[in-house]
Image (cartoon, rainbow, N blue to C red; front, top):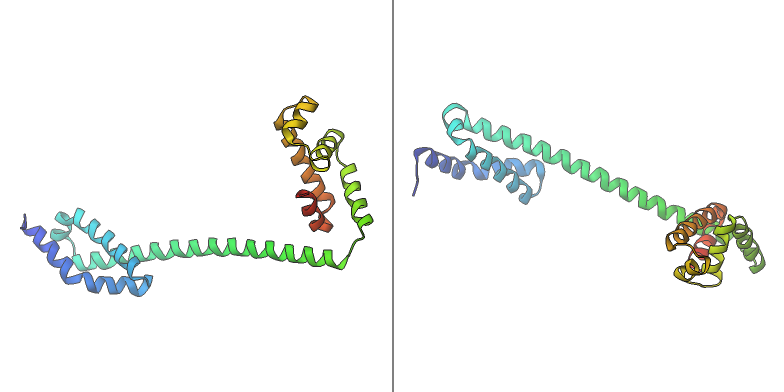
Length: 187
């Protein structure tokens, strides 16, 4: 049952123009679902303003202009999302390329066990004293960080901070042989 003449006019406009407006929107946004969502938003806006629109505005012009503007907003948003996705993919590709280059370089310089030990020992020796002591206890002696904190009478947070410093310094010192650093990291 219809409440007013204006409701009836709105329903008539909706029924009469929906398919045509949907095709118009879909022509630009491609996806049927996206076109329907845009159309629903436009008709909701139209419904909320129907009293004014039905008596003072060219309804067809309003509907097509509203859909056009919403399609523009939609396409701009989608293009921005795609740009962000592309940047993330580029970053990932660069990371893969760096890892590949690192491994290929590493393979070109086959090290003897003595050379590897010397490089690692030299890098560890370059650590600050407290940092080196904590790193050795954790990674070489295999002690848990909690046990090291108790033994040295310092907090676990201090252990974490010192290990972070050690990793950063070792990564920098072993940057030319990054796979060694990773090996050391998971040692």
